[in-house]
Image 1 (cartoon, one colour):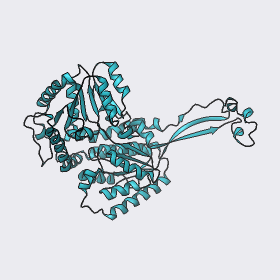
Image 2: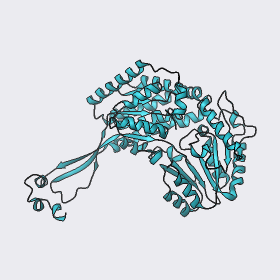
Image 3: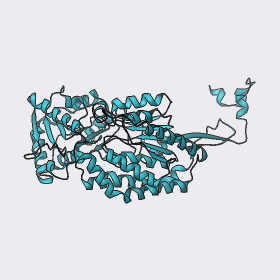
Image 4: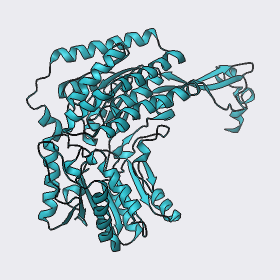
Length: 488
């Protein structure tokens, strides 16, 4: 994913002079939120529920405007995809939190060592952290912009959102929607470019979520470190799909290609590249072509094809293909007479068969409608190649051999994964979502999201007994007073 990536943002804001008034407003909003939180550190269950219900109403009321904003930003954006992945994804997340919020807010009892005589009980209480920031990407402006706010508000926090400047229509609409729904000292949306983004990351948040590239993730983490702000980073990566022998079937190939079509490959958990048995390389290409001919014969000319986010990103996609073609690599366009439409930034989906490892598309996260298909002879070769790269957000394995599937999942590392499916782990509202290593840290969604944006506060309550006597001077008799000392 990309929010502030140099190659994208430098182009987008090269001539932009950030309005200093916007930065001043940002800082004033932050201070207002800090003051408001100081007056209401423990929002009630009822108040938190009300805020989640307001998010649901806000999304459903503005669904048509959301479709229009996404189309304006992407050139072309399918309305059904906007409904499912941007609108309903957020409302489902809020509905799930509403159903479980009372349970999540309960203190969690912890076992007390019998040696600690005098302890009446011990619990972990989930306490709001305070003012939490969310830096959202361009590819899912509403789902990743407003979805995590569900977790943050459920945890009792105040929230500030910085949408991507690469989706200005969506950013402006989110600001209007939020301003009409929440007071700015509860939820605030900051709209602007790179200077504003830098000012945003410099604020002393109580927690900061960033979704985007690993390069910018480093910058965000470094800025947060100046204030010792804890961070949650979701950074993407080159997610592989592995098709085991016997699994190169219409069902599995259709699953892989169908997911790759979502946002035209501009999704952090999409299949970046696919491993197939060497003997099935041509079969994979044939089945994929047949799938597209049936499912979307005029894909790049249809309303089902999402436009590439910018001309610069489109140029990057065409450059990746040109490099492979110049090296003599076989390219299979999965659409008869498919064309790149520079006006709408639509581009057909292509397979790159058996690419050389040193091609740019094998070194960088592709994030578009290009999928390298890599042949293998032994499963161990696949595991070795996956482990030679940075840990991705997802690893996807197709097949019926449970032992081999478990072996691949056990011997590789990723933020999540799926068996006989791909990307679904990011869409389940009850399943923790996030990365590991270079693909990120921390989790959001569901209960884990509630915990992520809460201070997990351990509380001990003293009852009758000599516990504290053992720890105060003089301590010569601690062993007699505190049996645990005898065992040390």
